[in-house]
Image (cartoon, rainbow, N blue to C red; front, side, top):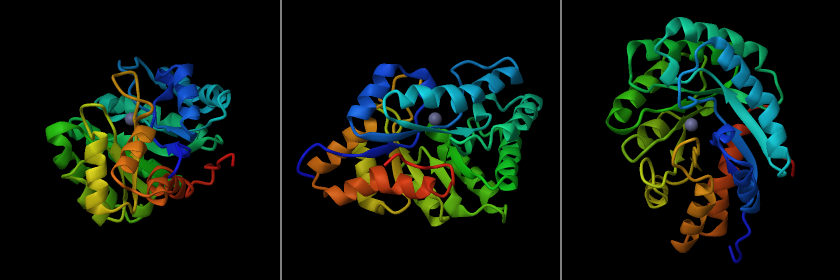
Length: 273
Ligand SMILES: [Zn+2]
């Protein structure tokens, strides 16, 4: 890579929480598409109607906002694990999803997963794996942070592996770290590394993981949201890779080709170029 030209896909960003300046900076850095999993809003929604409006925002409004900066916008639908303690609410929200699933920017069901590894969260995870299987959707999984990550990742992998309808190559397990990446890749699933300035993976740690495990079925994302996070974390890490001697093709693979290959398993994923 002789110049700073690069193209990349941001596979995990919560753009409803970001400003138009972020879209502009991402476009300037070479972003071609941004993918937005459904997530917690930072506060609990009070009713299924709150989710109905959110799914409308993800499938109608946000693609238009991204398009103003030449960016394609895709999304994933679900109820997140932080709001999954209330199983009745979750059932009502899950019942809303099929009417949105065929909208042109919807890639699959996500980010489902576990937060505190509770019994109710596990029940709601199983319901959403069932939804993905029924509608033949890709799955994007959030794994719990810090000390519960290993246990939570094991529980999630067990749910997915026990359902013969789920093809491992159609699942990405996100927020992997050094102690969880290998078990995910060994299952034949994809793994996502989340680049956060302090917690989760720093760019240096993510590159260490790449150098240890290779770049098959791995991608990197910023997971930028309403908290402290960096929407340019992916291109900044690409620069760091170049400093550490990675060649242009290797960088392009991890920041562009890999997400394109995984997401391209959905008929809805089409880039402008
Ligand atoms: Zn997220």
